[in-house]
Each structure stands twice: as structure tokens, then as C-alpha cells.
Image (cartoon, rainbow, N blue to C red; front, side, top):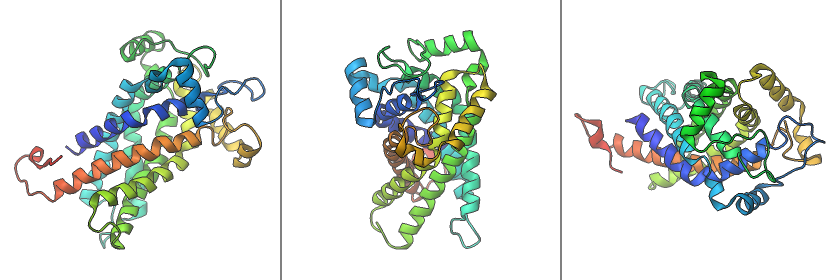
Length: 315
């Protein structure tokens, strides 16, 4: 049941964050496979990108890829939150005194993230390609013309085989290992710290919401570089996986944060390309997902139930 609740929380949160995910994807694909002087910036920021997409492709374009995005949210969060919660219940993330052990928590969170990345990668590939498809006047990156999720699956299988569904899986696992360690560990540590200091003592909902808000900022900052690499690999496919991954890593290592201030913020390979778009996605998504999951867990754990775990769901 932990896996199901975690998945439902993630899928539900996706409905609210998908528009910003579309914006983030377009911004991160800007300048894909081109030198920085060979392309024109289609999107100059979050608000500009949102306006341009809505004006050119229509308002509904901001919800492109919602079906695979919800599938991704369910798959990844069911595995990630479910595995991590099992670790918490079994005491594998705590020290002898019963407090959060950062090393143990980060290890278990990373393993949970890697597992969720492997199972969720096919949905990530389809979601990214559908979200990237745009009118030629504002198109960025490689364009894939899929009629929907099912058509996307069929076309990927026909042209790329099973491997096509795992484009960028190495970058995905690396990203989620770091992201899950940052998100789940910071959430648990923040929640424990607030509880110890009596903050939101009589408001479990407020406690979970505050911890999720802080956790969302932490994870957004932690995974942005690898997120840029993963998104571009999803879109490019598996034609040159080693070369693409290598170039992406080199770009991230060589482009310094100072370059963000002095050059175009969202060019190819930039360390913070799409970082501003990442915060509105991960912030609300983490708050909704973390709050719902946490509230369910607390309600369930406070309910005496010896027969069927389903009876413990209080909504």
C-alpha cells in the first residue's frame, strides 16, 4: 500500500506541475546539438516561454504529455517513496538513538531513486518527446511527431527497438540517485528538526508542507545539471548514447555558474539551463507529493489495524 499511495501522490501532483514541466523541457532543449552562436533563443525565461507556448501552440500545449507524465509520476514515486518508507519503518535510515542518520538515509534514498529511474525511464522518454513537439517557429531540439502516448510507444519500438525506451537511462539513474538523496533525506531531516523544535506541533499538515517546500528547493538545485543532460538524451534517442552522455557531462563540467550571468542563461550545456524552470516544477510537486504521502502515513500509523492495511486509509 505504501507503493500505491506514493504513486497516487506523485501522479496527482503532476496535474498541477505539468505546465511548468513543459516550459522546463523546452528551455533545456534550447540549443540542443548546436554551438551557442548558431541558434536563436526562442525562450528568454519562464514567463516569456509560457506566453510564447500558449500564444503559438495554444493553452492546451502547456499540458502536453500529461498522460505519460502522470504514468511517470505514479511509477517513479510509488517505487521511490515506497522503498524509502520501508527503510524508515525498518529503521534502516536511523542511528541507534532513533534519529535520522544522514549517511544511511542518503544511501537508501539513492537506491530508491535508481530503481525508480529504471522503471520510469520509458515514460520519461515519451513525455519529453511529446512535450518538445512544437510549431516550427518556436521548435527547439529534435522534433518527434507522436499522436499520443500509445503512438509514441509504437513509433519508438519500430524505429529504435526496446533500447529506445531506455535512452538516457544512465543519466536518469545518476540524476535520481542525487535527487532522491537530496529530496528524501532533506525532507526527513527537516521534518524531524521542525518537530524537535515544536514548530507546527499541532499541525501535521503544516509540518509536512513546510518540510516539502524546503526539500523541493534543495532537490531542484541539486539535480539541475544532470536533468539537462537527461532531457536531451531522452529527446535524441539511443543513436550515440556514449558520445551524447560524454558531451553532456563535459558541457556541465566546463560551463561555470559565472558564465550564466555573462552569457545566455539557457544555451546548450549551460550549468543552470532551465534551473529557474526547475524550481516551479520541483517545488510544488514536492510539496503536494510529500504532504499527501506524509499525511497518509501518519494517519495510517496512528490507526490500529491488524487485518487489512486497506482499512487504515483515512483519506
